Length: 478
Image (cartoon, rainbow, N blue to C red):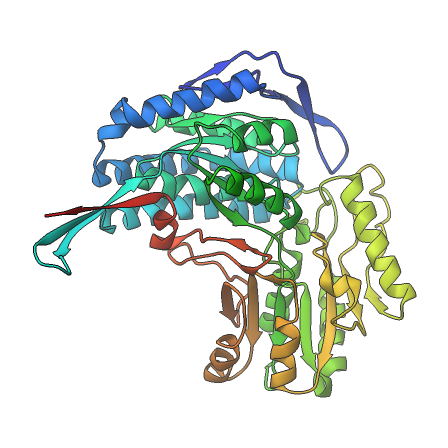
């Protein structure tokens, strides 16, 4: 049982008066622990602590090298706790334990170590000739206090994507984890303390919508960084716009994997296509859930996917042999099942899955599902399901593949699979998305910008561009 009472403010847990939130396992419904919903007063105290740490505390006078070293120590401390953190994320999110080691904790330390290096090399000020004569000193200063609102599907990874560039810039942060998965983020405070970060640099307030609204609207918060649904992102963006508050929004996706007609359909390729959809039980924003296949090879690809997905082991996420665990809660399972059922009634074909697996009645399980004969305009091809469901869509030629891939409200990520990398790169260059992987299911590189076009968000995380989002530029003209 993991119990965290109150809010984490200025280096310590402060008892709170808010409602106690029970965190339940999506695998069997058991209670894993509790957190306390932060009140408006708790949010005020956390923002005040962050403000003080960023303006008058020791963090305010750190050099880039010192901040890089602090990020590196934080990575070390997360790594030292990797086993227990992976266990906890697996339990509260339902991530298969084997995947959690890399896909949850390994990527968290990877982001931190990447930013340690980026911070060392980042140019925080430079002098250039003035356009009217003389010199201009351009300084890149921390934006200030950052309110970082996290999703439940990858709580520590998304925290690192926000924390690392914010810390690199010299900002201070108030983290708000999702009420579905706040425990690992709360445990993360042990790493913060062991890394020796000054009090108030990182603060944590748990809670539901009301806590998030208090953080978004707080006059002491200079920037909001949000990862979550497009619907929630629109509300946050509107609230920030009303106060001319900076924000970055990493939102939903309905990513396409384009299989070109020259692809070698070997075990590696099929495994990559399956991973692109089913990783973390399909609960990742970059899941490549629209698989676009040329008509000439449609049956072959569908058959290969059917065989691979049908072999996947479904079960207890704590079992290292499990490949598919539960979705996060009953509402998610019921919503996904309803969309699949409507697709089937509309003429789509369930190739494999589409049912609740036998013997797993105590959790929110859905068998990994492949749906064929789907039109790109169908609900199931347009809606982000956030579960282990892929649709297979036929296309005529390369132009049609590109057109269908781009015909989406979203534009977060994509993949292109081909025996000819140059050809794949030409296709990738035509896609209106933030990142494209070639012959790989992983369209995220920690040292490069990540974010979406269209309704997939505003701004970028990752790489030096991630730091750009947490600085304000000032010109001093001589």
